[in-house]
Image 1 (tube, helix red, strand yellow):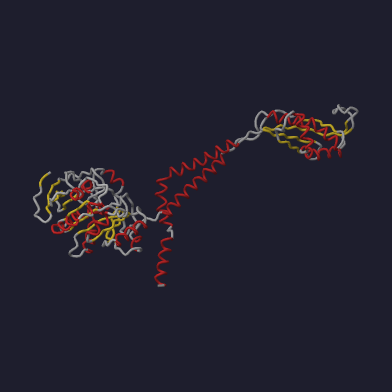
Image 2 (cartoon, helix red, strand yellow):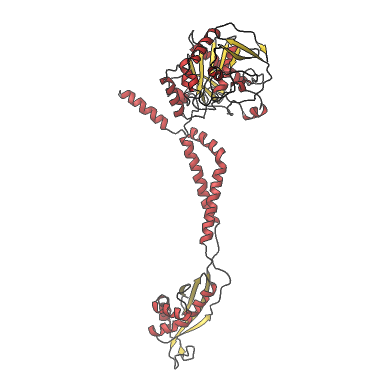
Length: 500
């Protein structure tokens, strides 16, 4: 028990470990996809900072006056600038040293308000001394240039009244009169702050992408499944490059095409060999399913059926995805035919089904184009089971393309099948989705013979080589093949094929 617990803990630790190379691999696609949003977020952060700075910026104006202090006596209190004042160095220094403190007094404030005729002082007053002299610099700053000048003049006017009470008679000799500033002394500096905000937005955006990449736990190679479930990998099907797909917009991804890549065709030859080895003598019905849509299961089912037919086997390919049929479009079959859904919905007593033969092969296709939104009732009918049983008597292999495991339809077909091939598209569905779906199939009694890694990198194990985009499926693919239409009455002899 302890050993099993240790093994489980070790597996859990391995799952929780973040491989730097895997993280980088997951991060780069996110960056290629969302770099515009990251850049836009950085610009938005910079713009937001600029707006905040602009709204909070207030131009400030400065008005300065330079004056000296003289002390003495005067015969007339109103004649502050008379010649009766004399220079007393000690007294002057005292006046200079006390001046900054007097500016903040309540007496000064009351006198200034009285002098200005306002209810508040619109400005900030400060004073400094010129070292070694009795000169003082009076500075008033305000958002209003005229108010700064008025306050400075008011200070010069009322200061002698306060100084007289503290030091005695004093006289201010103004060397530089306060003036109205023509432009603010501060400037709107935004470049560095906006740049920092934009950089922080960029870093935050990249951090979010990195977090998403770390949370993305997809299947990157066959080992990601092998070490978690006891399933063999039947094949690595390489992806088709974007350039090739663009050059063949109307071409299907079929091994019968002359321009199909050799590696692509070889992967299905290996898949066929491994698949046949897993089958018992009586095994005929093989279901292809996946975790989620767009993993390429329909393409793999069709090409596997073609590969078996090329070996001279009589193969029936059934489109079991009644919600979204795609086999006819994938194979380029345009002749009218009824699919499995139409046959099961037909309440008549006929037993024969009109099928299509893929030209020059032993592949017979049971597929239509009509979709059914709720095929559960059809699939529960005994008619489906009887149809599969009749097909066993005629064909060597029956390949069924089913919906993904997220639909209950897949379990129905899996129960009727001898073997199930599980399709996993590289770097698409999460590992948890894949594992949960495989376990769900096993719980329903499905016999999963192995999995196929679709859109794998070249190199055999899905770890190296160039990477292209995977293949999908759809309608409207034309291959230039002739088609023949056949009717098979299961349990009866096969009628000759007719031209469309």
